[in-house]
Length: 280
Image 1 (cartoon, rainbow, N blue to C red):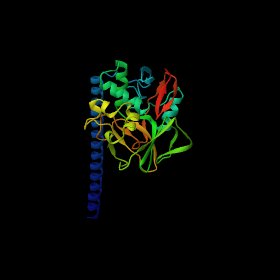
Image 2: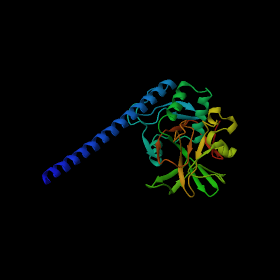
Image 3: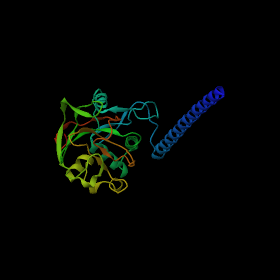
Image 4: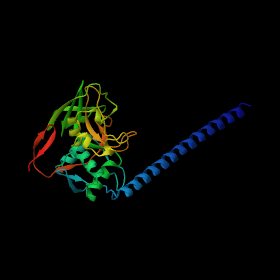
């Protein structure tokens, strides 16, 4: 009798292991199905927008806003996902070629012009690629100090320490601007129209009322994610959570992002309120 009971126990354990294996295989199959559906949607979206197939490297072909844009963010493989970098790693990669990340005003001005039908085919492809897949780093750091938001333009010296970003001793920037953010919460998306005009100009390169309707409507509003008190964090943009339009400005939220560079094609004389001033 004890042998029979033992056999039953052994069979029961084997049955349980087989059930676990079947469930695991089913989960893997479901993940593969969802991944295939996602890639099919992205491919359909690429074709609908007229975006050429993305190479693994990135090539400068398009000029806009006094800078030359990388046409594509680097991919793991041709047509694959964008490679994600920590901020400093992305910046060091770009600096080797004399580039930097785009400023928020450069990136969102490009998107606004795309929505207004003012871009060439090459630039439409740049913006389409920028709005696809993972979000991308911008050349700015947000730091919250109580009811003040400090925005550093073209920052260097931000290192991920495994838990958060930290300003290093050699932290530097081109310009610093401060904005009142009283009663604005951190770690949540805030609609752009709650910020003052100077902040909107720094982010978008134009006043809120001058933005395309798609960027100021309730469903497509540009939204901003503020860092927590005492935290400095590199800024990025792109589709996040339920907001898939790619207009978002994240001053926290993600510690890795895709990397796209710009190279200035006109001599920059300096900045006024964080906005570059160019030699005519």
